[in-house]
Image (cartoon, rainbow, N blue to C red):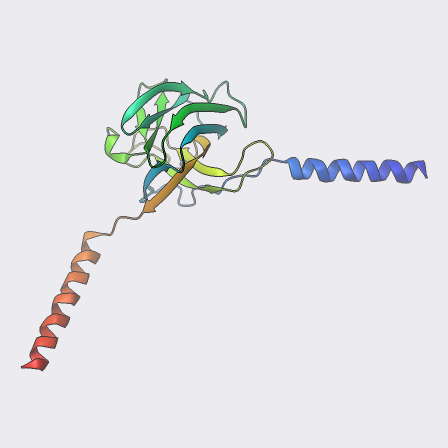
Length: 200
């Protein structure tokens, strides 16, 4: 009877450990290519913006910062060499709809990379983002992963620094290539011209 009870305890402990395991956010799948998605982040509601450290594969020393409506909060933290999974940083109170720009301070090189590609010195996207369902240490939120090396020259894995943010709403847009846009306009013009011809 005692052996059966001990086995039951071991099984329960194993199930608990499995459920407590860290879930992994969906990683960037097109490694080696620049992420073409343009992201815009806004505050989902009035309240605090919380950041959670979700791991690092970087050799460089990095910290995280935030701009609200283009103004730097002056709050920086979650150093990738000293932070642990699930460690949090409160960026303070924002208003619903405020525009949020995440920044990675690369202390090893002096570079700063932003979630807004227009602010980057190489004018290239340095982030990948998607929604995250959460786990026992990090709540559900918006996952943002950084590429911390200047492009070109980076491995483009968008996995050097990983964070999850709460109270953040993300919208994504894949830029339409100019050739596709021109082709669409050409087809529209042809259909208007054809319609006019049939009416004459």
